[in-house]
Amino acid sequence: IGAINLNAQQRFKGFSGQVDTYLGELKEMLESDVNLKSDAKKDFEQLLEEYEQSWTNFSIQHRKDIAKLSQSMFKKNIRIRNGFFTFIQTQIAFQSSKQTPESYTQWLKSMQNCIANSNIKIYNQIVENTLLLLSEGYLYKSKNVAWYIGDAGDYVFRNNKERGVYADFISEIDLTYRSIQDSNTIYSTLGQFYLKDEYFEGKGGIVNWSKLGLPQDDVYVELSNYGASLNRAMLYADSVIDTAIAQGEFPGAVLCVVRRAMDGESMGEILYLKAY
Image 1 (cartoon, rainbow, N blue to C red):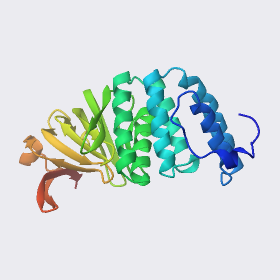
Image 2: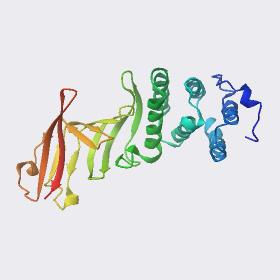
Image 3: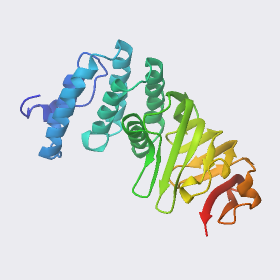
Image 4: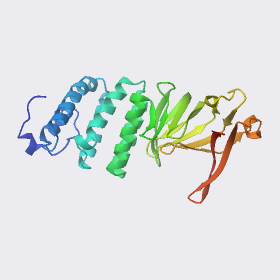
């Protein structure tokens, strides 16, 4: 990448959208950013060196899509410090993942729609959520709440015109959540993770409370359709198949079923278990 070119500070006006000049333009953007601290510059230089190796593995069409998307990002005032660093990390993560070319195509298509119709905060949130899923197996991760699948289960990215990109889990997963108050796992479930809404729409699965010492073959609930607000570790179930725990046969614990409403419409039942 070399030393900083002072002339680049004056001439770099944005991305041309051309594949052949894209890597050079990333370097020009780096050199022209006078507000970027030296440590951050070095980090981005190292990232670009890694990205150059990944770049040649993308198809010609994907390179065109990346260059076009970067052009739109720059026009929306996204720079290295507020989005491009994570964006490049995400492209590298796609290369090392099991994602199919079509899955990546759908992701790029959705992100192009997003940058055209959403603000920077929403766009960057989706990119960050993509990176978390690809690199660490998290659907959501914060100081207080996390939803995790690890490296198990197959999923592909698809584009929904109204809700944006989502990860469609095409094989069963064990979805684990944790919060300050609680943690548990939904076993053998399927569903779709909507990255913009940070919402998981699930189908099927089993929850037990073996961590409380209750027999997992006797004390459990079977979920039908459900939704999970990932940033709140909240589960909304359309229906639950009754088990022994719901009939009160285990006095050491109680299954709490609470009705909630959101925007005036019932969102189903919120399930949780607590021990006496």
